Length: 231
Image (tube, rainbow, N blue to C red):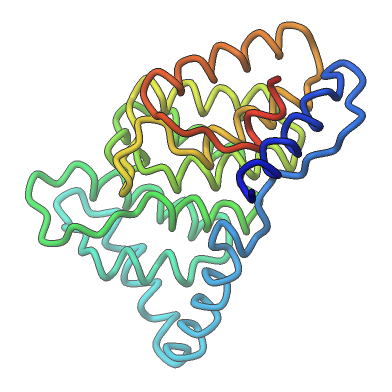
């Protein structure tokens, strides 16, 4: 019965015209839903805990980046992400990330993609986040679905719908790394369709249907809210 009711509800939504947008379906994730709130809280705790030695650590870290033969340690980069506040420190984090990603030997499997995206999210560095995501040399850093989710959510918040879809297309071609094994992460698909839905054009509808067709080829189930926006 619950499944029948859900299907009826979806069909009712589907009757709404794409062109008139009679039905408002909110799918942009809250800051809590994409890990921003927890990230901010963790940063506050980190800064409070290491406050006495934080300035000295940052200076030492910045100085080490300027040395061509310096090695970037996982824990140091994590600490810098958790404490970077200004443009200079954020630029240092990015330089360190690029250097770290080029290390042939890594002693940790920690994934920096989504923490970097959350840092740039709270610092409103959307252009930089987009540039990094599209950087082919960093493809193994930002191939996780969470990186795409955080970036696309920010782009849609800023009404940059074309860029949000661009992130989805680029990520799809590169391949998403997901815990579920899905070729197309459902949350990321939802945001791509959301961006196209908000554009409210015939071309956007065509693109949305193309995406849904590809998704159905690889993943059997589709989020009902996502499907409702395309019908």
